[in-house]
Amino acid sequence: MPVMDEFKEERESIKNKSFKEKLDYFWYYYKVHTIVGIFVLILAIVFIRDAVNKKDYAYYCTFLNSFSMDAETGFMDEFAKTTDVDLDKFEVRLDDTTRFSLDGYDQTSMAMVQRFVAMIYAGDIDNAVMEKSLFTNYAKNETFMDLRQVLTPEQIEKYKDHFYYIDRAEFDAEEEADFGEIAESNAPVLKEDTVDRKNPEAMKDPIPVGIFIEDDLRGKITEYGFYPEDEVIVFGFLTETHADLGRQFLDWLTD
Image 1 (cartoon, rainbow, N blue to C red):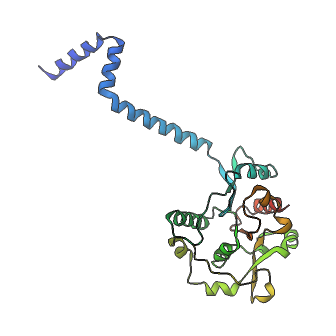
Image 2: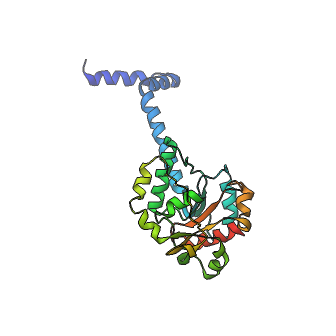
Image 3: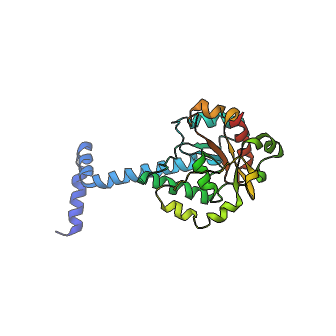
């Protein structure tokens, strides 16, 4: 029997079936196609929804190795309300999820370090807070900006007694240790820092690149439990892209 005749007979047979029989027939022959089609449709809907709802970052700050869990949303919402950022279009983000071992070589630490370094290279992080030895590790690689270039004269006067200094001479000493080496390692190799980072007089060419979040500046950090009260932490600028919001965040954080 010719193929066309077989096709006509099958079509006539389907026409005479009940709705349930037609549904069973369809499901039997096209089940896989239907499941794949539904899956693709769902993916397309999710992708379009995320693309439409996705907000660009107006400001991005990282609290590296902080202890607080799931506090960042309320914390930054509180700050965002003090700014003129259109929160319907933009997001003010605090990332307190980046954590890695300071003396270990596990895969999680490796991935986190690589992600953090990649974001630094891309200029995605506006400001960062981290404990002192880790801050020193990145400061020696010229990660942080000279505060004299980003802070207002009023802020320089306000924070000068809390400045963290790096000696420009240390850049030459660390010339061979670049971000590529740090990114390829599982965790930064931290050496004990014996330099008095608050004493520019003891340095050849001191550069203020950080602010110690301490004493009367530490209120909100302690309130939200981001770091233990006895841990020495430092705030730094990594880019000028959103420097206005970075300055606002610094004042809000330390008031």
